[in-house]
Amino acid sequence: MAAQTFVYTHRVTYSECTVGNHVYYARYLDLLEEARNEFFRAIGAPLLRLQQNGTAFFVSECHLHYRALARYDDLLRIEMWVEELGRVRLTLGSRIINPEDKLVLEATTVLACTSCEEKPKRLPPELVKALELFVGPVAPRD
Amino acid sequence: MAAQTFVYTHRVTYSECTVGNHVYYARYLDLLEEARNEFFRAIGAPLLRLQQNGTAFFVSECHLHYRALARYDDLLRIEMWVEELGRVRLTLGSRIINPEDKLVLEATTVLACTSCEEKPKRLPPELVKALELFVGPVAPRD
Amino acid sequence: MAAQTFVYTHRVTYSECTVGNHVYYARYLDLLEEARNEFFRAIGAPLLRLQQNGTAFFVSECHLHYRALARYDDLLRIEMWVEELGRVRLTLGSRIINPEDKLVLEATTVLACTSCEEKPKRLPPELVKALELFVGPVAPRD
Amino acid sequence: MAAQTFVYTHRVTYSECTVGNHVYYARYLDLLEEARNEFFRAIGAPLLRLQQNGTAFFVSECHLHYRALARYDDLLRIEMWVEELGRVRLTLGSRIINPEDKLVLEATTVLACTSCEEKPKRLPPELVKALELFVGPVAPRD
Image (cartoon, rainbow over all chains, first blue to last red):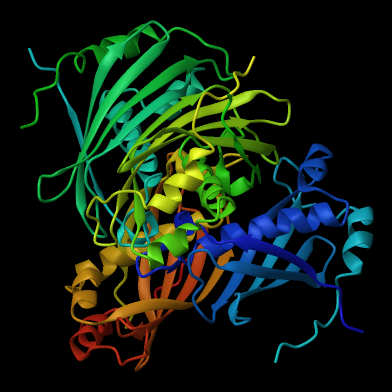
């Protein structure tokens, strides 16, 4: 059974573009964070509330494959799902797709769950439950 | 007598440029902060040490006049001086100049001195003393 | 008669915050650009289309008064109107308001209309017409 | 024989930090670009000149392992070398080290050589020659 996928849209600004009119390679990580914030909110666990309850996330790995260039004013579709749900680590998969339905970026982000004092800790059980719906093979993109 | 001027150089990266190959208008504020950090270090009062001793600065005003475009790889000259030294507020003047000696930006930044709990407080006396050398009319630019 | 005001909302990300958990002073200019893009789209003149028809805008001045700090996850309300509509220059007024209805930032941005070769040119008549509805005194904020 | 390593230093600004006082995960890519610019300049092939001669680079992959947090005002040491020198692709390895000599980030960046019209092309022979000194196993870090 294919996993559920979270979908978020983002409109590219001049701020995010560089020489040659395309999104600067680092800005995609800002977009992934923006989408991640909304993903956690959508599953009922906003990061701010988690943090107020003593749970934070630090990015421990990020793997990016840039496939095509995104341009100013493109309305990008950001897809996000859970690749792996460990005890302390959460691996998110993401894809960014441009308005011509072309794949712009594939990303894997590994998040480590920590206390607010930056010590590793287990993912809270209610968060695990909410994330489980998004775990599993994602429908392939032709 | 003309005031002393602090001079800092910065090389423009792709990260700072936008569509049309020029520095994005917001990035100049990042450059001014970078220059400000080094200005405070140069006068013997690094912002980190001030902060560890309970003094922080918040920008309360910023006035920017964009005069010419800075381009990728330009080695910019950032000049900085004190326009006004109040009890709680410090007004810094700045100019950014490109490698062809053309004026790129004129900026005035008003900083409010605060405690680390974000309450206004007086500028520490030893900082006032160090800043005094940089107060006064700056030699005009032809 | 009070001018019409364009309203845009923006959710603060970690990317926009700095040490001390507040939005970094330069990032507000990115937010203003984001709101400006949507303002031009809302009045039927997206900047991308203007550019494709040979009209671009460069920021020539920016005046910022920082009134309060915006924090991570704040849903900010950005208000925008026309302060002055010249032949070549367009002055936009903006206010950013936080979820507690506190004023965060007041900004005035002067845009110069140029050709795509960066030469000054007059604002296109159909754009002037669309902007006129937003010119005039804005209802004061108590 | 161990490869030659390019070394660059960068001082962390408030602009690069986020909530919790550490460098925001995306900003390391800006730092890597900054170091890359200086690496190409140091080997006699500044990216601006390459571009003026019809050669550009696009990042096609980026793999990041975050090992420790960098903080405001840290003077970071960025090490860079060539992991693989292909006909069209250049793979750079990087390490960022903090003032306490702790490893902050390990990164692998794959650059694709293109014409200015974004078509793939072979790396210019004189660039290959300059890069060859930096290819090979890097001395391990204990």
